[in-house]
Amino acid sequence: MSLIVQKYGGSSVANVERIQRVARRIVKTKKAGHDVVVVVSALGDTTDDLIELAHQITKNPNEREMDMLLSTGEQVSVSLLAIAIQHLGMKAISFTGPQVGIITDRFHTKARILDVNTDRIQKALGEGQVVIVAGFQGKTVAEEITTLGRGGSDLTAVALAKSLSAKHCEIYTDVDGIFTADPRLVPDARKIDVISYDEILELAALGAKVMHSRSVEVGKKFDVPIYVRNSAHEGEGTLITKETKKMEDIVVSGVALMEDEAKVTIFDVPDKPGVASKIFARLADANINIDMIIQNKTQTKKTDISFTVFKNELGRAMPVVNKVAKSIGAGEVTCDENISKISVVGVGMRSHSGIASRMFKALARKKINIEMISTSEIKISCVIEGGKGKQAIREIHKEFGLSKK
Ligand code: ADP
Ligand code: ASP
Ligand code: MG
Image 1: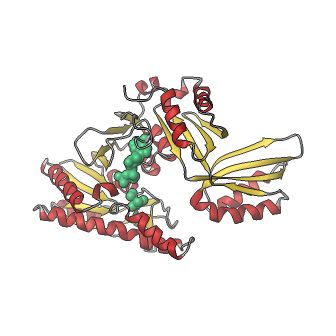
Image 2 (image 1 turned 180 degrees about the horizontal axis):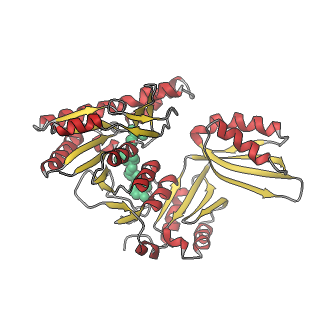
Image 3 (image 1 turned 90 degrees about the vertical axis):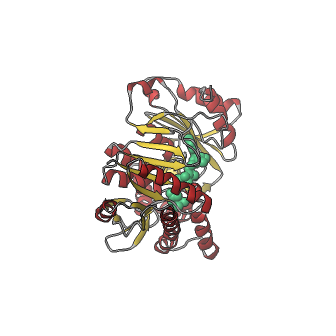
């Protein structure tokens, strides 16, 4: 008997009717002869609502307590789904992440999974149960509850699929699969049938929220086939798999927009060895993630350094930057939250040239100014003025002929 891991996102279990629809789908899979392990997210916008409650008290809530709070969301959905499956006459049991031994490091609100102990799941499967596991959560070796970062239920699902040697992992969401761009922003975006781990990894990291990027990392590392499908109807969806030669023919697979970053600039930084190292070491010590960095040599002995951080870490980043700027004798520090980052991704970029110039041309046509640029082997990203993202993504999508045929 083969084992399948299915994950249902928040919108797929937003209310009782949808939970019942999901329960019917699970029953069907089980009756087709598969063992099923299900991972669920919190109902609808529960996680946002819980964060909002904490923010009504303080903008900087304690991260351990946030994990205590946020992990409650998934506990509601797993138990309701178990009740719905039992009501259909099938055996089902729900567990929290800590109960099934999902062990993480101790970085609250963005913990990484270190180990998964599958004994309890295997035992329940052996009893013929459908096993339902709360997504997005785990515990440290010291029994502290942790969460895996927004969208982290995908990671729970892929990690379980790997640990249980599942045939594959199915991610059920509210769109038909992975598209050439977010279909909410680009209505004529096209569904992709097969995409490589590397491409969706880049797209996810660059703002395509359809998959949690670390979940794809785990899928790639352990070669777990992942299907992304719509929970509302049948359909093959998108298969995420290893890169094939044929994929290289497609120059640009997708376009992504990220609105979660802010730009920090330190002016008049002394232009000498060791300065950048000092700045970024301080930020790393504070566990603040840095994305793009730009430094330009000027004709004076000073230089300006700009970099981007996540908006939700800006509050922690600024005091660190101000302090280090002072200690190295730099000038003013500014931050700009009104930016967007637009990116194009495709494995075909390795063998095709001229992609950047086409992207810049599309932005120029819409008179959109580029503030920062970064490239890698399979992606090009531009930071542009905030508020222009939607216009930019549509124009670039059009430029690369990605729309429905
Ligand atoms: P879930 O709650 O099921 O995890 P998410 O909201 O995390 O769902 O992810 C699904 C959403 O991702 C879609 O509704 C869509 O708006 C968005 N999305 C962003 N980029 C893409 C893309 N390239 N393809 C498909 N969906 C995308
Ligand atoms: N409920 C969590 C969130 O909204 C995890 C998830 O949905 O994957 O981020
Ligand atoms: Mg998600």
